[in-house]
Image (tube, rainbow, N blue to C red; front, side):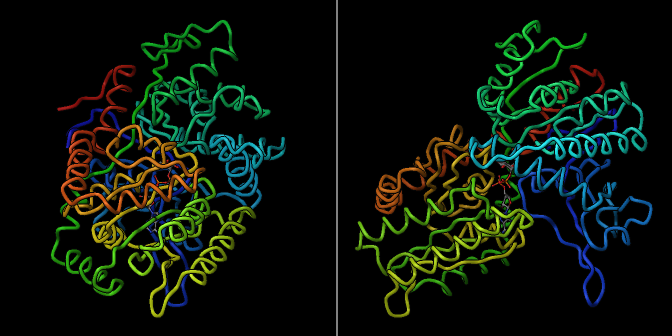
Amino acid sequence: MALARMTRPLVVVTNREPYVDERTKTGIRTVQRAGGVVSALDPLLRELGGDWVAWGSGSADRLTAPNGIRPVPLKNPKYRLHRVYLTPEEVQGYYNRYANQGLWPLSHLLIERARFSRQAWSTYRAVNQKFARRVAREMPNNALVFSHDYQLAVFPSALRQLRSDMAIAHFWHIPWPVYPVLKLCPQYQELLRGMLGADVLGFQTLDDAQAFMDSVAHTFRHVAIDRSRGEIAWQGRTIEVKAFPISVDIEAIESLVRSPRISRWAQGIRRHLLAPGQRLGISVDRADYTKGIIPRLEALREFFRRYPQHLGRIVFLQVVVPTRSEVHAYRLLYRQVEEETRRINEEFSQGTWKPLITIRRSIDRPRLMGLFRAADFALVSSLFDGMNLVAKEFVSAQVDRRGVLLLSETTGAAQELSQALPINPWDPEGFAETLDQALSLTPEERAERLAAMQAHLHAHTLYDWVSDILTTLDTVAGSYVES
Ligand code: ADQ
């Protein structure tokens, strides 16, 4: 691991907490959240130690953190989770409305879905300030603060106003909307000012970083911006604006899927789901409209209609975990997925074979990685996606180098995983055609493609991502040491 020693304490700040404690009939159950941010940061803090500040959203959260602080894990703790408690009104305005019904669709260019209101904005800003007060009150001097994402866009400036000793890196996990789209958000200037409170602004791709600098250039015309160096001069400071593509811990995934237990499990899944000569496809997503789940189902229908030779020979396992179910659009999408899946199965099933199998819940990480190992192909069909960790996890878990990845061109991951077969989720016929081609690749072609992508992931790991961000933060703050 590249990050061996840090001279300044590390504080992670996210909306979602990594572990949620829920009340059950028999006691308390701890649930680990599905989602890219948590999958990326929890292993990191377990390794480095430190503090994580996040919204305490579980029904038993106050019980396991009576003074607002919960050790993680409870036995043999590695770091401290500081829970920020929110009222139902705060959750509604900050999270469900402003972040998830405003900034999320806008950033994914799904403009017609975006809804903004001044009331939701004022709650959003107040909650960001609440997070900042908590960090300012409880965190040590000179901490390196690593804050995250579109729920906390104005957190950096709120914290800077309270504590100028801390160095702040803010990472934006989703696409940054180009200026003409950003401008549709009535509070876009405040959002930009809020982000510019950070010392380092990280984005998934160079395109996103450039789009952010463009937005600043259009909005604040007097500001000096060096686009080639990725630097913005702002209120006497220099802010670094850079691409830091998030990644996975490929070595950990490889050793997980090679373990006897998961190897047996992966083989068992194939035996259980497949008849001889059948191939296993997989998709894994939160049930989010940006992930292109309905377009993927349409493409699968197109595929079975155009290429009936595959009928009876493919079993497609879709793992769709419900998410943000407080928001109407998400409940609607979930129902549509169910409906569409049922129709496809009705249209194409033959005897005991049916083309689609659905798993509707969170799967523990070892088994999920085992599924990726077991699969012959994976479909990642996001309409827009900051990175998409599922694509990188699939490639990492394919230690037998049997599978093929079909990857939407509009994901951040597609800019790195160039040996994946590119698909356009808006083009069902082209998508179906690419799937047919994928299934006729020779074993050597498949192995070569996977080997090249795996080499890339070995050279660009999760730890490189965090090390690059914190090293950049250090050059600004001047006191973080890498060995
Ligand atoms: P997400 O939109 O959540 O993340 P993604 O990057 O694919 O998207 O990460 C999802 C994570 O959740 C993966 O690690 C996946 O394995 C896990 N997961 C999904 N379904 C699961 C299930 N049923 N059971 C268990 N685990 C499941 C956001 C951005 C992305 C960006 C990440 C990280 O939208 O573009 O890649 O943050 O920056």
